[in-house]
Image (cartoon, rainbow over all chains, first blue to last red; front, side):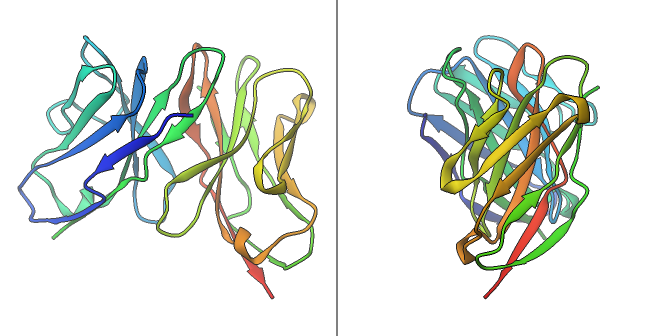
Length: 115
Length: 114
């Protein structure tokens, strides 16, 4: 299965600022997914990122708040913009490996605290 | 829309005892089903997955799960729990056409007593 590196692993940010989270995969993947896990909650899909096209956002998430880049087949970034304490969560990326392998790998996550 | 229900928020078992974590799903077609484990401060680790074929699926760490279409269930089992199994367990269902796009249940926190 793929190895995913997420940076930063954790951060404490001031409200009103933005944080960009990086997700690097050690192999080319078609689709990358960004999830949010709020404290004590389950995971919620934010958006799906395909290389060469705009990300597809789930209900309740908008591009202005969570802009995503996908410049190539091994890398993606998620930015949390104009942060408020409600954005304090763990953000995880996941990848869709080649058909047939059906490997579902998650990064170790970015623990964000907004103060 | 697909959904996943994990009825048990918190379960406590003694070390060496058997374990069953419940998962029920709602999905219009044959689902892709997953169990993940999340240890404190850690990321998600895939325990096992079901796509088709044998309805009893073996996973890592001695876990298994059984897909029962008639009951819309995919319960996770382990015959003898170890203290290191204490963690949060998530059941998830994959979306049609993109199995990796997952809908997660709310999770079950497993506590193991010695």
